Image (cartoon, rainbow, N blue to C red; front, side):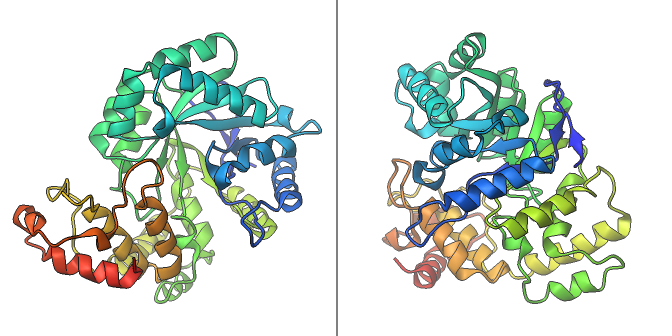
Length: 380
């Protein structure tokens, strides 16, 4: 296993982190705990020392399962990360309540890396107002957590504001070769590094979409001088960036664990040749050519008076076509836009055809027609 450091933390961290959001499950969605435990311990025995979970993962099952998996001395072998559910915070006392509950769930007296989960403009404004930075200082001082961090899902200006607001150990961002300009993106990666903030990458394979043997992509990889699986190409592209310390993989099978551990043996920064990067470029171009709706995500059409997340609807519709993954992306569409975090449903089918969005779209897109296409494609 290869290791890297955060600028503000002294320990060596495995470049492969075990993400505990996609553990093996039974048909009833309950975690297959024996399999999950075997996978986590197998990874730790082979050098993985960063384990990442969160309060809502697997409908709240992940933390207790991880806590038990780290029994028998495994807790002492890893740096454990979990996250404060920012969208559930309504008052300062909630922060202590959730942290204490998480310590009990994980059967530990401290969290090594404690992240404010899923920060965006709204959750950042709310948690800041309620004193989240003071809470983090107090939790570090009393020993419940060791290093504060945050995970992020919003635009680059919001990311920069958050980075500059506190002495964070690291930021966790979505980053892969298709998301160089998405959310924080490459500019955010370099911004954080310049300010001494480490980076942990989530979704290096876009939830497994970049690991698929997608039509038209296999041939591009086959013509490369060096043969890798799509998953290895994707992971090593992220590891190629020296600003990245840990790449999280949400592994669901023992086979995936073994494969990713093998890939991590080659995950050195700067190890990709120009030819390798050119292969990734051709794959990116092929994926990009499949975009159906040329929405730039400028959000001039927002807010929609009927609550539709217009750019989000178009993004998921495009993803389903780019990666030939209607069922998988459809599930994400239903989860992300269904209002499960306290909001209202934001599906394309919520459109009432008022036409206001089309007046605002600088691209002149037939927004209402496209929303009908999305609604027909994903259903209600």
